Image (cartoon, rainbow, N blue to C red; front, side, top):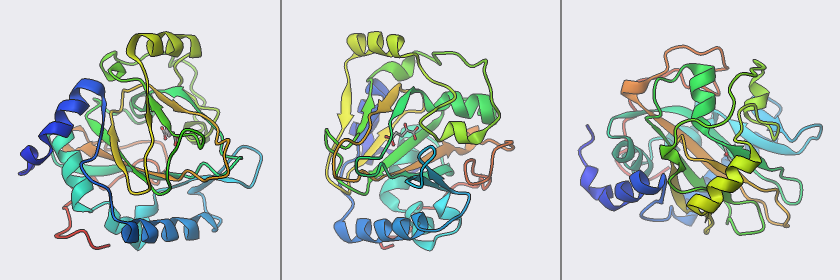
Length: 265
Ligand SMILES: O=C(O)CCC(=O)C(=O)O
């Protein structure tokens, strides 16, 4: 068990109850600037980890950056992020996924209603939803640039929706045409029952959200990019030891991450 559980007591209480929480502090502008620079560089390269909006050359996301980029590799050991993740899952953690969803001005497409754990269970055989998504805003997220929208409390409902139709195509796990979704009418009812929260805030904001929470995000209808970096930390006791999906989508180094001594990138 991590040593510092008590430091995040309030976040853990909110997270257990609502399925999401805000981190206790912002990451400073210089650090965010460095990460943004690294991500911008990666997004200009042609490599399998860079995914485009369907039928365009608009970059939708970059994946697995911690495996080939030093700044991203240091970020996954950032003490605030590792300790928050350890506290929320109650175990040591390793990096299961790393991605940055860029949601470009005007062209950034939506994410339909879904639960992340549906992908991880059905595609990778993850035993339980004992993982956590830590989101770091690299740009401000506001109402018009497609912020993440979560339905509080829905992480306790188990997996919803249909899991029969499997394409075996990992692109359908990262595109606007998602493989496992929660039907819109069911999501609309859940929204009436549970309410909704938009994860908005300045660049440097940190959020955590649960693998089973129902969430979505709309198109970017503004002139402002909305880059959101997501590190999924999985509990070491819940490690996925083999998956048919590429290594940049499913982490294979299942040793627990050791938090850095300080928060210098
Ligand atoms: O970037 C977003 O707005 C949504 C991301 C998301 O839901 C996901 O990556 O599972």
